[in-house]
Length: 260
Image (tube, rainbow, N blue to C red; front, side):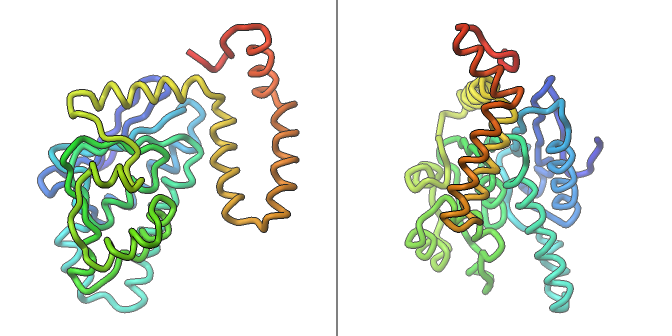
């Protein structure tokens, strides 16, 4: 897999996706969005990949929309804007619904749509003193597409204030309100990410995928249907190959085959 805006690193069953436009603070343009979407869909299907890490090259994680892309957007028709926004939605969906666990290693500042890139991840770990902002209102627009995913991490009250003010806040504050899971010193972030990689490798790969499906169904199904789904799903997984291996490994006091 070769890309113009991304760098891909593979270490056995772990794939690292690096936003690689440091000269523009990894700002997103159409090409980057298409490449990211393609990359996440490919790794979601790749049976050799178990875990994905998303990070940025340089001092920023992602500055949001690329300036040249914004200049073109000014002259877009309504139909072109809808097509463009659907491209962004497809990108966020490809991360949020990826069958593999996704860890965001937030190495620096993020604004606007760049926040959506880590809000859609399963685990978000950041370095201290990053600056974040939902800055869309300063341009007379709103953080519309990312709101679906941000709402899964923040309260409506917090979204209301941060969205209408566009105020800047730090990674420490983002951790406090749940937008970031952990803030660790820059010199320790690789060790913390690797720690979570090890933790995830001790869990059944299919079980992780089914957990993500479970939460998706929780959001979509009526309460009664969801309860019925949970009964069928746990029964199905108990007799599955992975479920049998995990239960027997526990009873036999050994590590399951999927664990390092």
